[in-house]
Length: 421
Image 1 (cartoon, rainbow, N blue to C red):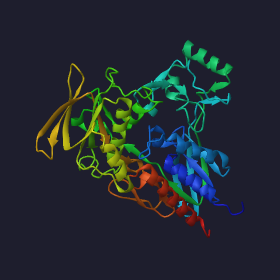
Image 2: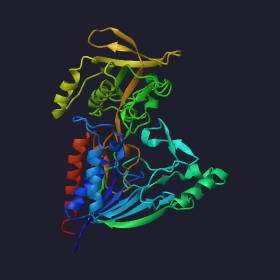
Image 3: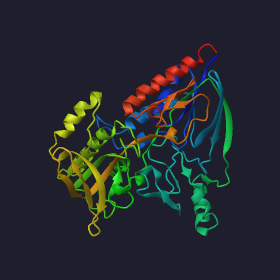
Image 4: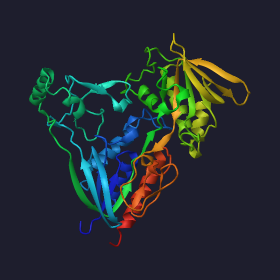
């Protein structure tokens, strides 16, 4: 197309995917860059969306299809933007593309089950292990194997690994640990920055037991625990002993609204915990969930979801601040201590397991955009930039639906930047 503009979208989560397909379907060429070996970001790791409680694979699959069918979208995974120079309508971006270390010509991209090396499974937040050569997850896009070069290089001279490589070759799968990263420069008119968020580091919450109590997990881990493709195949059981969870506590604002950690509200944690309480109730109808909260926030259109979930008399809401979580050394039950705000009574209660509702920290709070003219607020969220547009949680905490709307808006702004060059 004569005069066709190019938009660089950085981040392949739901916001980046949305911005990419919207810009491409409006007539732009799009370069979509994602650091992980697959698209989908945090949404791919969810069990269900709220409020409909449907799996995220539905929305992702539709968007993957839109990407596959659109020749104007170029996708680079295992890639990072190292530098952006220039001005709106005339940017040059340097993209470093890391190798996958494996080429799969079988068109099936099935996991290599006889790989002799296992590594922590990042997709499941380290709750289980995966092969060092594998498909990231069942619906991964692109549907290609990826290898952990660091792990495999440690065993590359062993007979077991050499035998494994020979077996792969016979299957049409080539392992190449000598593959090198490459850097390419691209000319683009505008940039959408949608690198998303990370869960707040729960190990910093010393009094809440994460890392010291075997049965204290975080809310993102709970998503994987409840997922059919998660570490327990959807069985909501305790990490310590595999016991079925009958009595589950949710600790809200774990590190959020706290000047020592995240001073702001992440806006979706209350709804996420309500949703996760339904996971437990669906899995084990006899189970009870108790949510300890400072303020329950179900903003805007989600009030009906709050009403629906809280009608369940086995989902108990307690306005109170949990200040200490310890472990019974014999049973590995978790003991929560705090204060019931409404009654004024001290809380000391025992549960099978506890879930910490940690907040959303923008990745831009740790890794700044390597381009000109970007400003941030005190928490690292993108405030403004000319020609480089933040999208989704890069700008503020958002639920998935709001991310879709915001990313569409960012794509429109990117199109306006290119007009009249």
